[in-house]
Length: 136
Image 1 (cartoon, rainbow, N blue to C red):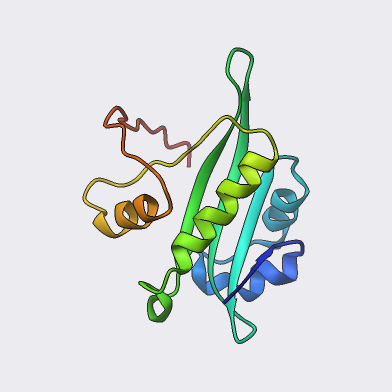
Image 2: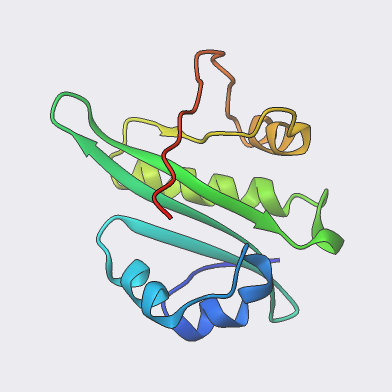
């Protein structure tokens, strides 16, 4: 397995099947150009098989932390350490960039995601409820 930081819209569109919806080139370009936005792709045999994205968030009294925005691994490549490797890669970047921590929201009952994050060193602090606003 090879991990690479995504740098082009073409890389993201080649991995489109890993995302929830088709990659929109204009949004991909904005993501790649935005300071503090990161996306790593995992490759097997030159084919993208997973990704993790993260966004640095800065607050006046806390400093910078990494928000693990999304993790996806193609079904045939799950339970092989791909997700763990991607999360660890993002965590290493967060440390390198001076983030004081990293966090992710996990859907209730998503035991596979929880196991992946735990295997990559994450801990459930039991204190999070996610509230959402849908503007779409």
